[in-house]
Length: 91
Image 1: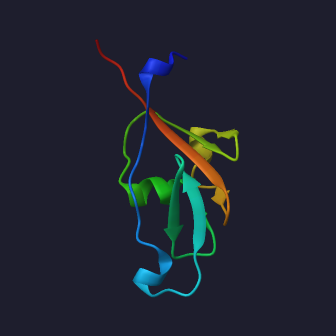
Image 2: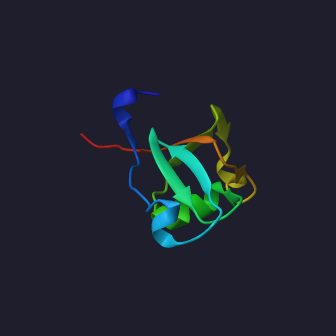
Image 3: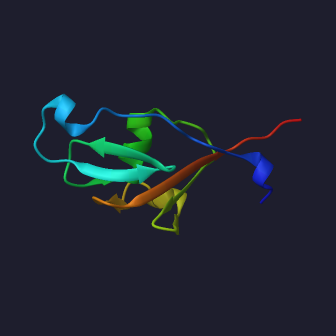
């Protein structure tokens, strides 16, 4: 894979205290801390919340590649490191 064809997906959520919930999943998403108001969530839920609907998204959780068909089943837990990239083409 050509590294020039990969672009990281980035955005931010509010810290747990600002939204008023008592438990949260704190992960690192593309080197940025993120907090979600659940005890567990899936890769598909993260992508939906970020509104990342790119047709070619590559996701790794704790260094392991997650198959596209497994996004709805792959849970993400507190402390996990998630990398999400969408493939970019063009000239």
